[in-house]
Length: 262
Length: 279
Image (spheres, rainbow over the protein chains, first blue to last red):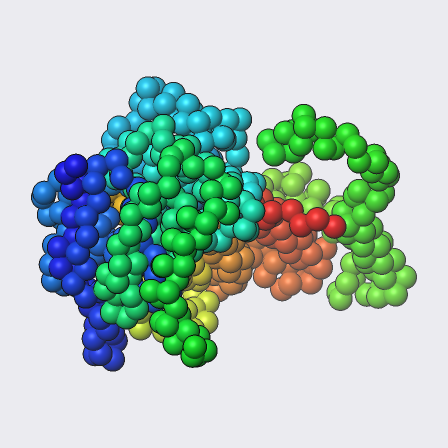
């Protein structure tokens, strides 16, 4: 398999108002193959979100490079779409108009696009809600809209920034299974950010563990659980062993960050 | 709405006991109270005018106010005053709305412009600008220009400042989402910042409108040949209380109607801010 997305020695630091330099990421190197589902997990403050913004092109690396199909990323592009956390839908737009936003700014709006968007909404389970406004929807439905908005521009790479973090535990489980169903049908390359170990393992082909401040790759593990995966795979011993391995890698840091030493 | 119809299809609604239908008075309770309060105060006004303060130099019953308004209308004077004031207001407030929104938006997106204009906006906003009305009369004479200038100056600042804060207050995440889809700066402004700020801008228009109405009266008090402010001043000088109150009531009515219309517009533009709370 060839690498769709490559991070080579990517470092990122920010200068604060007081002139201090905060290092968010240091020498991060890993790749994502075409059609692969890769998750990045780490304790809060490990630079996960910064990593995703670098890949989307909203930020530029301080050192190193991010390559897509072998070419460095210069800015946001049509080949990538970012799925944000819950609150990034436009409240004054209907569900359908939210989904069409990407095509609209890219000047690709037409009858065909509208029809495809309607179909996409039915596909993610929002048929009949085209004219509803985000505030009329539940958290799970808003996140489906968010996902549909990203899928509407038909990107090659889907970047997901803790998309289920603000959902309740049960809704989150259902949405994880839904995401796998959608991914299975569309076969996008996915880079998924989360702080939930079980979520990362359940969804992914490979999991990248990021250590804390500055974020560095601590471990990369292949998840060899067979697909399609049902939700009850989470209760198998093989799954538990994988969770253990990731947890052991970041436990010390999480303990430090909350002040509870082992 | 769609959400509700789905619940019904699933039969969730059907299993619940039917809510007792509330009667007419219960459903319109606050409106009925407001209307009742107006009726009572107007009745008191009439009674006090007839039986308590009978000196017509100080106070008149409501019926005399209506009679006087009818009289002025019959002579064609009231139409002239209303038309004059309305034209002054429309021009002054219209110019304030255009300039206020344009300047506020420009200041929100151009840091340098904002830094240069900030002290002047703060200075002029804090100054009771109606005090400049006599100066404008001197500059622009008694014609419509002086009134338009006063109204423009008093009503522009709430519009400008609300536009500025509305655009600046655009959710950072929404801007980032638009950027991520490859939106250009002009598209971000037109498709994200402006719609996001629109309800705040309309609130600014509502505040500016109230100040503009004061501006009409004050500008006309300092020198005019017609208009509702002129009618009030002239009536006061000739001790015609009925005509004075007629002028005041028409201004009040114009204020209430236009302000309510803008409130309704705010609600239409940003329905997500007025999500109905369950009682």
